Length: 196
Image (cartoon, rainbow, N blue to C red):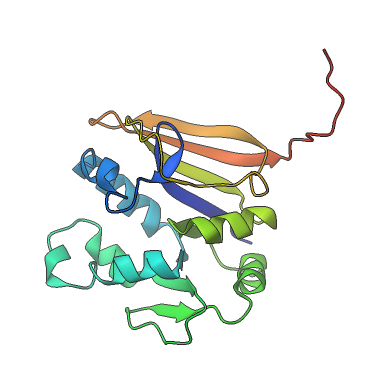
């Protein structure tokens, strides 16, 4: 049985995307080749990437094109299996992609229970939130960018926050971005009496 990992870019104040029209500016301004090599190594160890419709459309519009030909991530992005969580009935056209169907959460639960390797959700806040509510995420991996956005799209909502996490790894990149990997270790009981 493989792990289900959620990988996200975050601002230092916890947003996964900035305001409309500038959603990924904070990532582009600090993203370096050392980070791209790190991602390529992580993706190479996976059985599949999991994406929501918006993330899939954005990435499928770039990685299979000539514009991405010189990117270290391009070969692995086009080779790896991609599982699409989307309400669209359209068959995905990106190489090695498939739609998870009418009940994608149950589909991912079954894939996770199988004999395969690890799966990684990238981007896709609504997918991460749904999987976190169902307690299906085993690990969170973050690239935390040294930028305060002040507003934007949060990764999790109060009803999807996984609770306590155990640090597995932390290291920094040349641009000041920090990679932090955590294992989900339990739920925080907000109804427990205050010990103080």
